[in-house]
Image 1 (cartoon, rainbow, N blue to C red):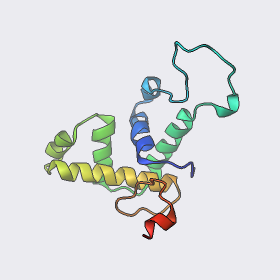
Image 2: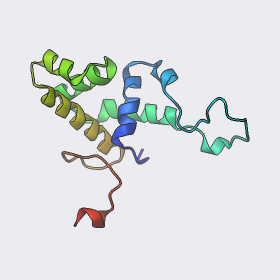
Image 3: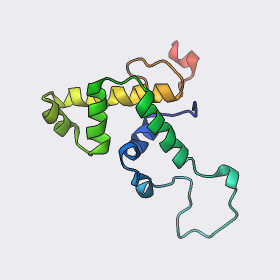
Length: 133
C-alpha cells in the first residue's frame, strides 16, 4: 500500500468491494481509445486497476469504520443510493448521510496511505510548507 491513494480512487473502486463484476464496467484510464492505432505496449506500465480494487477491498475489511459509516458506504457505493435515500433509510438529514459516507472514504484513504485519519482528510498532495501558512 502507500500508493498515493486519494478520495476519487477509493470512490471509483468501492463498488467492486460488493460486486466482483464491477471491474468490467470500469474505464481503464491508461488504455488508449479503441479507435487509436495499435502500438508497442510496455508491460511495466500496465494498468493498476486490479491492484486498486484489491487494496480497497483490504481497506474495507481493515479500516476502523463505525457501523453507521459501513452502512453508509454499502448504501452509497454498493446499492447506488443517493444521499437523500440514505438519509431517509437511516432517519437522518441528507447532510448527515453525506458526512458519514465522506468520513468513511477519508478513513479508508488514510489507512491505505499509512497515515492517521483526521476529519477532512483528503490527501490532496498539499506540500507541508503550504499547510503551515
